[in-house]
Length: 67
Image (cartoon, rainbow, N blue to C red; front, side):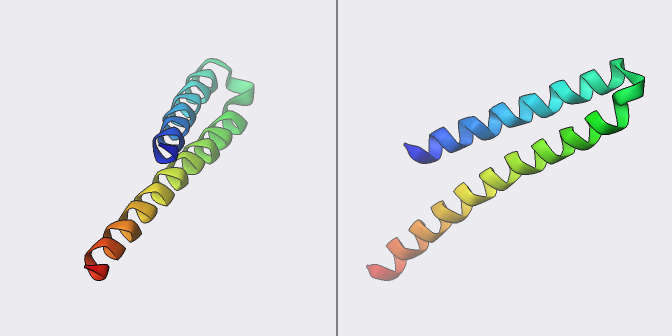
């Protein structure tokens, strides 16, 4: 259950990143800063996804080695 909540937050962060990119396209003076922020948010979302994948992988590994 917690993993699903983490993945939901990752999806939310991906949406925020997309929205920041759209704003960057609309606001030239802030474009560079918004693009950098968008990338940072996207990277955070990806890290959450990797953490869940690692956790799932380690659980599967433990299940196969303990049997």
